[in-house]
Length: 156
Length: 442
Image 1: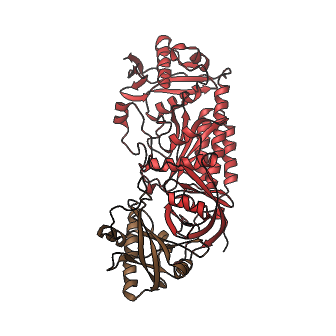
Image 2: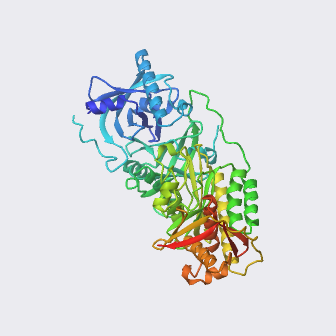
Image 3: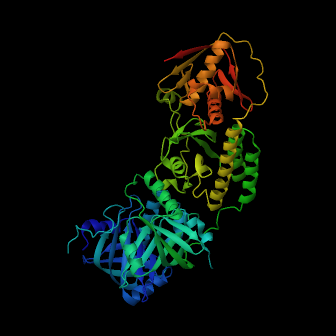
């Protein structure tokens, strides 16, 4: 599901936002702090803070349903990945990788004119967990005529 | 901590994109950024939905939605639990949101993409702080009494007896009492195709005489729609219109006066001058600060603009009734200096000693006075005789003569030309000439 281009995109400095829902279908929101491909083309891994986003963590634990949107601040190129996720605590290497992502995205946002103190409240890896997401579909969400369509170039 | 929507004002200025999450009938989530969120009342927000069909479909299957908004001052994040209430495709709130979307999209070069189709209104069930890894600094905005300041400015405008006084009381008042330092006072041409700057503060050159077509940029959007339009973070949008240009040589070639602008502007607001709901002009201010114009500032500027518009209309009315006494002081003896006035008939543009002054009706007015002065040595003119002269082709109804004379007078002053106008009292104007005139028509 994940071609090289999209894999490179999710590993680049892009904003990562996470949608989930509880048993009553009430939606949740969280921000991711780092994502990467795995050896399996159908899965990605995403880091988020269980301290900052407890509802999202509870939702994933309850039903695994997840949507993650990746958006590049400089040109609004955006993709949404949907699938099911399982959670586990992040290991040291993953926390380090997440820290690398945070430095890169803060730099990218600052190049876009945002002040670091505005960004600081959004991104933390406190009580970091890793969601391993099995991808079921990928959508183009870049603003424009293609928004909402399935990404055609991706083949299983 | 519990919050009310009004306290979250700085989250709804479009500085940091909001995020919306929904889920379909099976509980499959969908998450996306949202371009515009507006406060409807104490318990409702409206979300513009230009192209995310999935979000729109989900809320019709499952009316629950969650919104994450960010305070543009300090980055604080808030989660809003929402329930879909209703959708609208017309009405004042729709129009005002559509205008904001169009103005900011057009400036980003995405006018065609971001056409607003409908607005979804949600009831806010709860507002919850999101934990932050850092202490967010307290709100920056000082508590200034906008109401008291507005009263002071409105009183000053209402006390002004001429167009000059009204324009100055408005711009100076806003600078002194509201603390906005860069602004323009633009008046609508009677044919309603453009607005023209007749007052200016904080810019060099002033840009007096600059024209903005209706519908162009923030100023044109406010003039065309009769609604306030603002942008709170220009770094996300490309600048519109002619920002910073060298003026003099360009002006002489193009016969148009560039619109002034701050290179570093972050926030801009354009408020229409309304008289009985007809647009008579636009009040424009800009600031190097993000989020410079809050809801209270918007309200204050709207009240001030209404008063300025009513006062201007009254002035034009009063100028139709007789003139007051007043005589110009006698001229110093005309020197040997020659003053060349050139009138181009095709656009009524006037050049004095090679410098472009003005075109259109204001150009005809200047030529009329120069002609009369050459023919009979007259240097005093009344509004009445100007109105009676058919060669000037003033509109019969609502000629805005006072405003045009003000524009002409300020333009001559700014260019420091040897021909100037002076106001001699209500309905009377004097011509000052330092040299001997020669008029050429082309």
